[in-house]
Amino acid sequence: MSESLAVCDVDEDLVKKLKKFRFRKETNNAAIVMKIDKDKQLVILEEEHEDISPDDLREEVPERQPRFIVYSYKYVHDDGRVSYPLCFIFSSPAGCKPEQQMMYAGSLNKLVQTVELTKVFEIRNTEDLTEEWLREKLGFFG
Image (cartoon, rainbow, N blue to C red; front, side, top):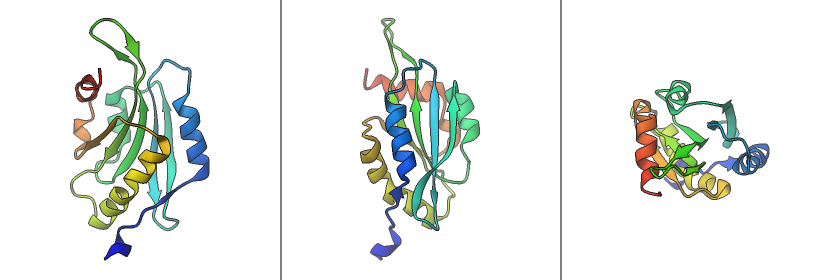
């Protein structure tokens, strides 16, 4: 059974892009959306977005397929401070093919370790990806 839980490698160019993204200087919201190339068993770049709100991002994420998202979010704290937390969002909608879900779930930890992020959130329904949801999640880190 263990062979069915494939852990995919991360595309080398994507790793470089993610490391660069981590140290970006821009102050807008931005996202990198990743998917798994099943044939290559590789996590690859699907899309990049600049200046994208959580609500707009929700429109970009497929409703029936898992995705990995690294999101740089402009977070204004209650006391007026501004930070730009990097969030790793694993979108794993109910209704995906079990094989696809397992492939993404199996690759999640490796990808999180590769990008070295600590704010890891999972959503089961793309409708949940809202600014309010993200602020609530980030509030625990504030």
